[in-house]
Image (cartoon, rainbow, N blue to C red):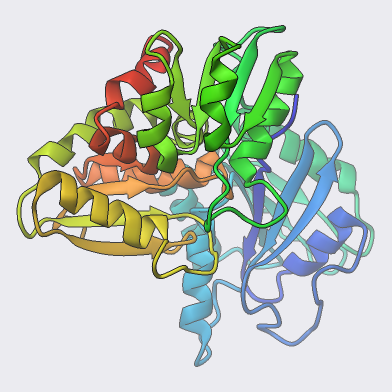
Length: 390
């Protein structure tokens, strides 16, 4: 089965604790710049590698948490932000264990980020540090015992972060046919498919099912001779596709599949109907977890969904956009609804941490596909098959 998530493992600590050297030792290559000059690593640096028994992971090298230079506060903030993006934190110190190291530990505990400590440079200086309930590993990058690090990673990395996720395994069986409706329009990338389409096709192949890809313009003629188990469409084609597909054939979208895979499906089900209760002047927070070139006339998060919501509600609404994994606004109390994209370019851990903040603040949440379905009058229809499997 294809692995969809790549666990993110962050290396955190003070300047010159040997974080970059530790990554180089793990990877077996010089992928991070090593220097005696404090503050060499300025922004988080990512490197994909394969870990035996786990598979591909992303290692994140971060700036020193004790950087007090002119740019230090920004670097430290990016390091803090990176803690919300990792599945496991390796906290590195060399020699003295101080308030910075303890602060990192407390931050990990408060944010529920799994972690362990590495006491680095033990060939130069060794301090007998014991922390109740926390493992501290002795390590030297000059004489690296990589196996002890790999064992710790395998022990502390949550299995949910690297186990193969399912898209349609709980609904489609081997030998069944699923039709994937893929419109070719201005938003379709030339010469390739978008990631949710590719991952859905691969998932169906792993199941042993038959994946049939058609353009929206070809769907009607195809259904005249075939009755598939399920039809999955791009959410933006809901209006046409739902008019063509008989109600006897289950219908959903790629975005709704990913609301199960990467998001909080029950919370989305609960939050989406808030759309009908929106009032003039309400603020909506749009959450887009990737970066792409913006088509000002055709962008789904900035143009299409805002226009659809105002048309459906008949209200004047205000929209703010958060892109990539940028921090959420500090004050969330003014938002009536938050709408998350499918999250195909990030991990479930990263999305769920963001959604937990919103839920704690009492902000209802939806996702792109569910919002479009609700405003198209087919919300119940396209979520029905998965409501039974919560």
